[in-house]
Image 1 (tube, rainbow, N blue to C red):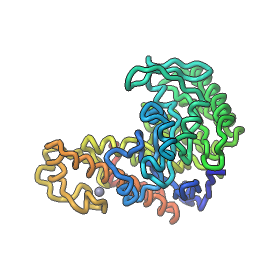
Image 2: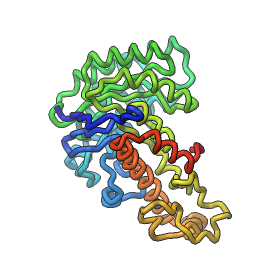
Image 3: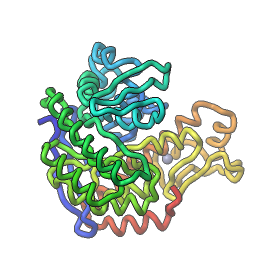
Length: 372
Ligand SMILES: [Zn+2]
C-alpha cells in the first residue's frame, strides 16, 4: 500500500488526532495544512522556499495540468515531482471541482463530464477512468477519486442522486487505479448539508476500502456554523485508521475547528491568494497592507512571526511595495501567510501532544478574532 496512516495519539481535552501519513515521498505529520500549487507551482514560491518554511506536502491540480502543459508531457519529463523540482509528497485533486465550477461550459452524464476549456474553448471529456489516468501520469502520492461537488444550496433530491453517482464513479476510479504500490487513491464523501446523505455516502464509500477519505462539498458558500455541524456528524463516520481530509478549507479558525472535529489534512488557495492581494493572516488578525494606517508602521507584519518577511521588513516597506506594484511584495506576503498557517499547525500538533488543544483555541481566538 502506498499510503499508511499512523495514529500517534488523541488529545484528551479535544479528541483531535495527532498522526503520521507514510507516503512514497516521505512522512507527513498531521494535522497538516497543504499549500496549493495549482499549475505545478505554489504561486511566487520556489520549492526551496517551501522547504524552508517546512511545508511537508503540496497540492496540485489535475484539471489545469491536463489542459496545460498536458499530463503526457509531465510524464515524459519524469513525473510531476521531477518536473517542478518538489521531491516531497504531492496530492492531486481529481479535476471534478474545477470541471463542475465551469457552469454552462460543462455537461454531466453517467459516463463523465464533457466541458470546454476555460483557456481556449476546446472540447474535452473527463471520466473517472480519465481522471485516474491523468493522475497516474502525474505520479502524485495521493490521488483523488472523480466526484461531483454539488453547489450550496442544493435540493436534497439532487444531492442524493449526485452522491450515488459519485459512489459509482468512485468504484470506477478504484477499478482503473492500478499503480497502487506508488500512489494512494482517496474517496470523497459527499451528501451536502444532509446528515442522512452524508451517512449514506460514507457507508457506500467505506465499502470500497480506500486508504484515505476526504470530506468534499464543504466551504462552498455555506456559513461556517453549518460546515462545523456537517463535520460534527461526518467525521465520526470516517475510519479511525485512515487519513481524513477536509477539502478547500484554509482559514485559521476553520483549520482549528476542523482539527478539533477529527480532521487531519486541509488545503486551500486562501493564504496565497489573499497574500497576493495584500492581506496577511497574523496572530492579531487580518492586516490589509495597503491601508494608510501602515504608512509609517516600521514594525513587522506580525511581531510573533519568525518568517523571513517578518524578520527582515516593516509593514511600511511592504505597503510601499504593494502601492508601487512591485513583485517582491507578493512574494513576501505569500511567504508570511504560508509560514503563518504551517507554523500554526505545528502549534496545533504540539497542543494535541500536550492535551491542551481547547486551551490553545481559546488563546488563539482571543488574539486573532474570527474575521477570516
Ligand atoms: Zn511572518
